[in-house]
Image (cartoon, rainbow, N blue to C red; front, side, top):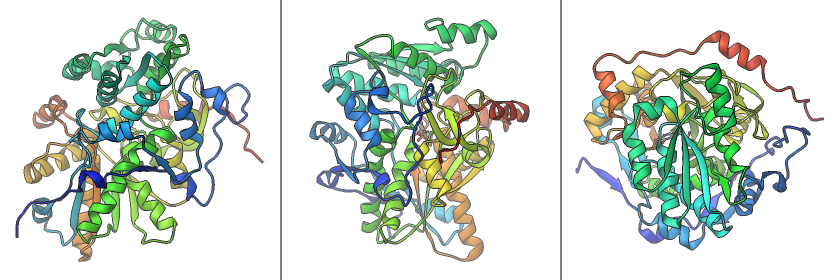
Length: 456
Ligand SMILES: *Cc1c(COP(=O)(O)O)cnc(C)c1O
């Protein structure tokens, strides 16, 4: 038997539609509210930020939304993405479980994020937009949007969270290679950034602050829109190509997953792999356990409150009901920048409330340990974010070993870690520790949640 099993779809088997889980949920997710009126937002309220095609996807209840042919054509650069069976890792763990992983690191940016950056740039271009502004944590999203912008001749401006700007100079170089402009956030380029710096000139930044800066710029100019790399319904929708392909590939492997696992920052790669499987179960098909893995230092799903909150720190975005640590919360500067967000996607949070998914949290050192074990057996060096999914899969495989169960485990390997080697070096030097957040700051941030009357 060959040790390497790789399940590849033909190019013409790439999905033609994105899958919208809203069509199958037993109960609709709570409405998104206008921060001023506390009334449900309508498409027009979002028009300064996003092109109408994306807003319509945001609110759509249709199960299938067609992927435009020009977008599929770009997807063909790296999709369908491969699914692997991790034979060597199974052997190293001595587990009877079969471990499969869907590898999204084959995209130009090295992660799942171009799956949504490309359609977002496409729809903006179609709407006549000239410039996109955005934020980036680890640099993955900024890189992905920079790449997508270069395909469509759009100017791209990226607010990169200060700690990651300093830790990852090569990320910035890649963004600049694609033609984007990169600014460390908090910055002096926006009123909000200046107000944060006035209070703390050494502020490490956070995704919430960078989002506020990007939104502030986007609303100032007619030809400029904002793009978000996670959290929103349309982003999760675009990522469902991951799970739809994985479903076909698991059929090729003749192995339906008992457990589906993804790491969760804002929730997009997790939703991407999980939602098609959840929908399959909701429509009467086989059910899988679905597990979101988050960092113990920023645990929105496992420690956050399910409440209405802002998506950013300045309070400029609409209010969404989600698992949140509070929009004033600044997570410690641990090494999975893509998971340092105070909230969770509304649809993922809603699925958690409906009991459709589980959530667990792990510390960074144990996640790096899992990632190194994975690299030494499977060859791929995972992104620090993806290490959380690897850790989740290993824990499930070890449970199967204890229980003597030959379950099928599927996880999303959301990206490679080639730009994160400083973090690995620190891990090998014994300089990584488990960062914990400040309980008092969390309590204060939760106390500061906007008060929104429960709808009747
Ligand atoms: C951004 C990122 C994440 C976290 O974002 P989600 O929206 O939760 O998927 C996870 N893994 C990688 C490789 C990333 O770049």
